[in-house]
Image 1: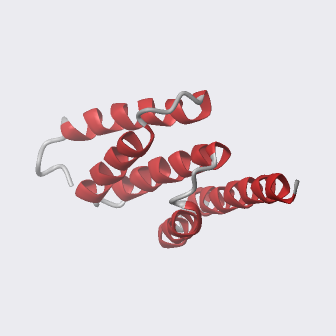
Image 2 (image 1 turned 90 degrees about the horizontal axis):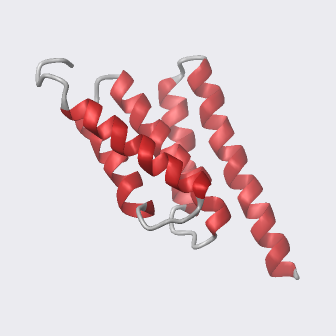
Image 3 (image 1 turned 45 degrees about the horizontal axis):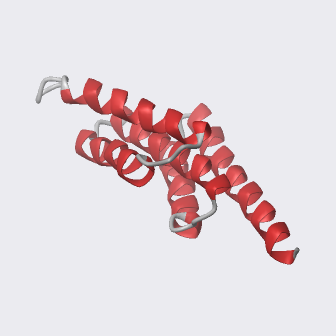
Length: 117
């Protein structure tokens, strides 16, 4: 029973960490936003908990978007590829949507001219 409670707590903590990054994105605090996503990945990046995977996929995708916004196109591409690599086999709709978004973002980014940044 304690293990189940711990899993629920961890999924809430992961979600809160994600929301922290999203809050920073709303005020264009890019370095704080990226730090929040990095903190989430550091703490839960290797989690086998499927409930945490949605927060992870979301954070990595948003990390890619932010890197793209600040002109770090190669790092953004790597983030999108990371979402696709980590979660390609997922059957969870909350996760697979981020895999699809990452594939679309990667394709869009690949079409940009090399001097677009």
